[in-house]
Amino acid sequence: MSDANPNGPYTAAKKTSSAVVTTAGVGGYLKAFGMTVTTNASEIEIRDGGASGTVLCDLHLDGATAKNSISSGDIGPIRFATDIYMTLTGTGAEGWAVYNEDSA
Image 1 (cartoon, rainbow, N blue to C red):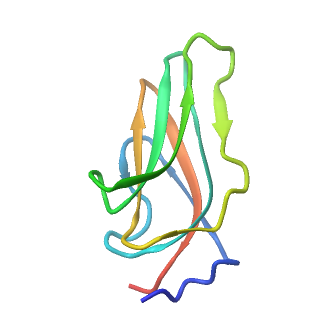
Image 2: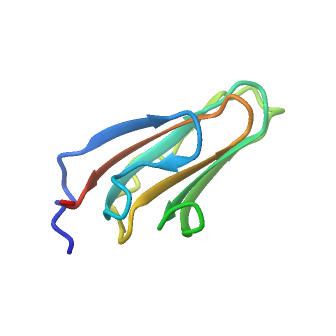
């Protein structure tokens, strides 16, 4: 059941490794996401349904560029039916997401 308000209020979460962002098995809305990296090429994928779920959003940073952070900007709300899962690749990558979730 979807009871999260797509207009907020929103919560921010920061992850240093791949992990579920919302409560596992609880859907919600994604408003924005991004990552910071050190010097290596990195990627962040936002999935609906855990580590093997469907990729709904992703961002890439080329390790050869001078940029060390990237943001989606305000993309939402994007509805996630199962849960919001963040997959991070790249040494030193940290990801963040702004979201709200349904009641558990």
